[in-house]
Image (tube, rainbow, N blue to C red; front, side):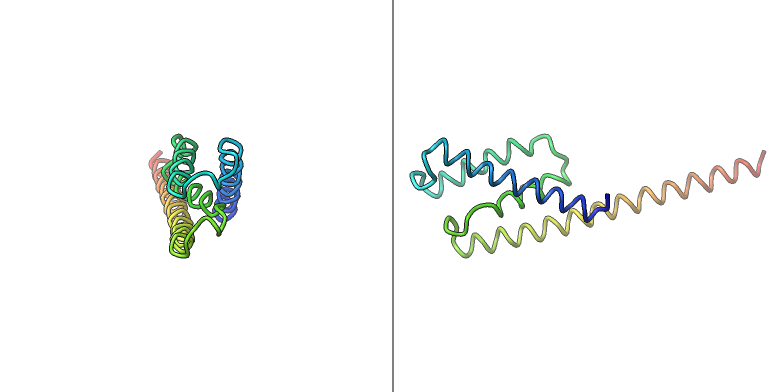
Length: 124
């Protein structure tokens, strides 16, 4: 699986989690309309935090940003929606950069091991 595919799968999982959280809030509070916006956001935040506690520091921000994209437009101001969209783009860019950095480090380790093995074989 490529890094792009991994990012897509993580975004999809986050979006589905966000939708499930919205459904759970609806069920628990008999619809989001009875919750003030601030309390709704706190409940959503807590549920996302619970889900991401055990995720890696690389995966959690992208998952979280994708989950917030599930919040319906009518529950957010334009500023909040813009912030959520911006966070999602930044989280994806950070995820891709981190994965590329990891791949480069692994390749460098592999090349170093190859050179060391070649020197050892030449010395034998």
